[in-house]
Amino acid sequence: MPKTHARRARTAVNAMLNHPQGTRTPVPSAKAARAALRSTGALSRAARRAEGNPAAADMVAIVVQDALADAFHYGRTLVLSPQDLDQLHLARLSGRPFPAWTTDRGRALACHIGNLRQLASAYGLCEDHLLASAEQTYKHEIA
Image (cartoon, rainbow, N blue to C red):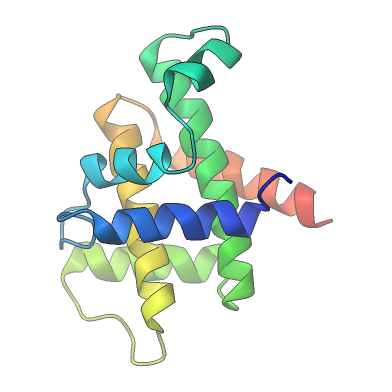
């Protein structure tokens, strides 16, 4: 049975939490994002073959956008909107503590999103474009 969007994101977040740089602040970790994505089968040789063996940056763009959409689905189960998650990401970048209302799962998800954005940036991709595209995909999927 295929994994649901939220379940894939939970799997990725758990793998990210097991990475030593998964929740570092204030700079997110591209390495932790790669580890999280590998746990879902993304970025594997089989996944690259299924996509027609694209260039690395193209593959990362596809996988990060999908993972961000999955993260928004998981956020929905935690009653966090994409905008809430963006605010938590900004809090992490600033070095400020997360708001008191934030749960451990919400903090972990915000770190995962930040790490995905960092991975996109490491490949020269526009984080904001991928984030906006992922949010559109998420909204389409919940409609």
